[in-house]
Image 1: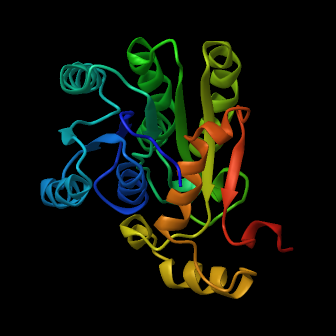
Image 2: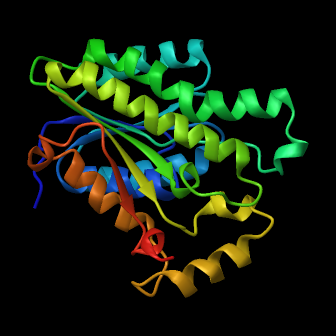
Length: 251
């Protein structure tokens, strides 16, 4: 059992899917949790209600994390509410799902910005709130960073950039007692997957090739995230941990 009593955490994209599952794991372990969302206030309210069952402080912050003004406001409010930051999960993501030859400059810039550049700006805002005891930062990636997936060109490239950024951030922040790592999830049937035109093909293909015999769940990813923010992971820096039931090792 990981004990995070008194720790303060921020989970971007924390109202649904993997972000929600991670937020709940943190709350179960005693951490105060702030979640960020962009559009779905109803989902955020439901998640806050669930988090609050664990007798911790839970708050929701509406912000587009790709917008610098929104980020400044988010961290200003978070500081007022919590006073400090110990754990940050960078989970909010978006992107254009199109074949490479159909991508415009706007598609590319948007996807790279929200999925890769945002982590840099999040960390820059977070560091002033992280104390001398250090902190934990986890970015959520996907197997598209290293595998070619139909319609995933822009998102895959942005996730590869994200993982590279994590490695570079980790060598700067490790001396400050801050761990920065990546969690790369296999196929997880969340709302995000519904935007794929070949969703059923992806799900069926993953089921057929996964040695564990089932899809990865948000809770599977959350379990590993909880480990990465625990004291047991203090010597893990700049790594990409894959949670996929063995899918990526099958030829």
